[in-house]
Amino acid sequence: MHNVETTTRVLLIDDDQSLAGMLREFLQPERIELVAAASGEAGLDKLATDTFDMVILDIMLPGQNGLDVLRTLRQTSNLPVIMLTARGDDIDRIIGLEFGADDYLAKPFNPRELAARLKAIMRRSRGATETTGKYRLDDIELDYRTRRATVRGTPMALTGTELEILGCLLKTPGQVVNKEELSERALGRRLLPYDRSIDTHMSNLRRKLERAGGGKTTIRNQRGIGYALVPGNRE
Image (tube, rainbow, N blue to C red):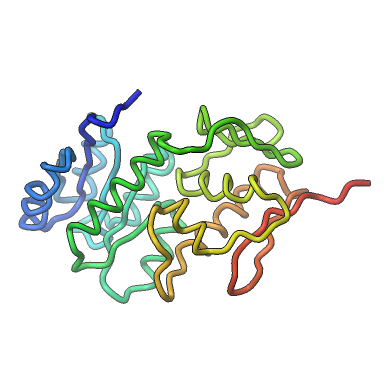
């Protein structure tokens, strides 16, 4: 079990060596150890041979691009991932979230913002939450102690962000949870103007619930406001 003094190990996959050096120096006082890989292939090799708490992944990489790396990673791991995208490139952001990224930052970014995002996601992934116990609706159950969600006892492969969103909805079944609250709880940050992150994560979660056979319970979108988890009709 990690404690608050534990150093967080983060893998940066980005070919910008000056960025890697700057972030390594900036994050060290925050007890974040940054290891850099300059290509997607090198990053996947490090992930296969070393242990990390989180990944910062640039989309634009030589050789295998960041989306390919993320897709490969998600076949075997739910390790938290922050994608780095070009400013204004909404398509890459949406695709990255659809492939399983937890959050994104547009370049250039303030390193303080990156540090805040890293800490928020790591607090969540290490279970540093006020929420404990189990929540259940129809065939869906979430156990915060094990951080595992199941449908009829079968585990679902959810990212940490998707698990937090599901938890928010399970706590108030049938009631709309606004997107601002979902962003604060699941991403650890305020909702930004024109930010579609929550909508994309919700689409991923809805798809996974349907694939797992949880179709009796549905996610309802109240346009412009938020989402609700609606129980199935009982005979």
